[in-house]
Amino acid sequence: MGNADEAPQFEVDISWPQRLPNDWILGQVSGIATDSQNNVWIIQRPRSLTAHELGAVQNPPATECCYPAPSVIAFNPEGEVIQAWGGPTWNQEQSVLDTSYGSANIVDPAGWDLSDNWPTQEHGIFIDHENNVWIGGNGSSDHVVMKFTPEGEHLLTIGQWNETGGSNDTQHLGRPADVTVDIETNEVYIADGYLNRRVIVFDANTGEYKRHWGAFGNIPDDTIDISTMTPVNDSWHNPVHAVRISNDGLVYIADRGGSRIHVFNKDGTFVQEGVFAPWTIVQGAAWDIELSRDPQQQWLFAADGANMKVWILRREDMEVVGSFGHGGRQAGQFNWVHNITGDSFGNLYTAEVNTGKRVQKFVPVATN
Image 1 (spheres, helix red, strand yellow):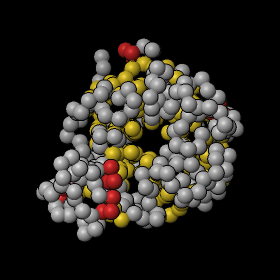
Image 2 (cartoon, rainbow, N blue to C red):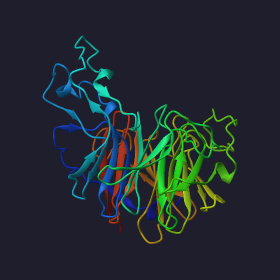
Image 3 (cartoon, helix red, strand yellow):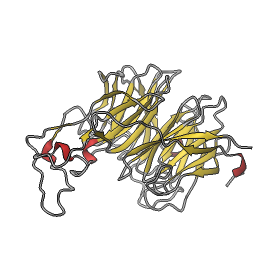
Image 4 (tube, rainbow, N blue to C red):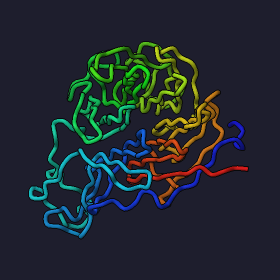
């Protein structure tokens, strides 16, 4: 580990976000991003909520609270909801609550009206330089990335529902995990994903295929055995979980199962590798990536849902210099921290899946 004395430090802001309106409750929060106005956008999974959490919408109603929040929600910097849309809808009439002992924790799946144009399991969100909203899904049929206006108007779909073709198919995706858009070229980079083993690039307006590559910049090979959680394989593991582009034009890819981050030029030329927490044999350590907002982007923050912390790496040499957080359910602790983003003030925001089901804000602390 590098010199921990130089690492930035953070403390949790327990006042953020504010209470959700309409007695809404969040499910697993599987993506988080900020826009040009420092608003914080999340994507969450209403279908991950239990019947106990959705007591107000059961048939018959079981409790006073709560109601499933829309899948996409935007908070202003003060933590107030300013936008909300998307996701499955709940049909109370056709749902039936089984109140027998032990089973009331299960939501009747008949209550959800599933849509043909929304992911079965939401995963990943990004806000581009034009404030368009990009989302994906990692359900078994969710082989698409979708682009929307901030108000939820659909603009573009890349890939096709229920169709996939492997890591060298240039028209189909494989349960994509994350996206980022290059402001210089208006190209969308997709971490693809839970089924494929690559990053793939398209035109962000037309969806035209541009290029793709795998680990170390090689042609992806789906025949390589990735059953062992180790960072020495010549293939990325599943999932290829996150992608970010730095101000100096480097592309960062999170190989979650390999507990590593690969760095490339935009043409796919391999630059360097950063490995951390290689002892992590379950789920892997490299879940999401965020770059610090100073001009040099000196730091890289890596969310690690397996070890339940955020690693801090020095971007220059990809050495770990610190971390914050640990497992738990109190403020500042994590249960499956899945994503991380930042704003122009240097604040960090995290999202939790599994039973975490929340977002948290961390503010920088001055060090002597």
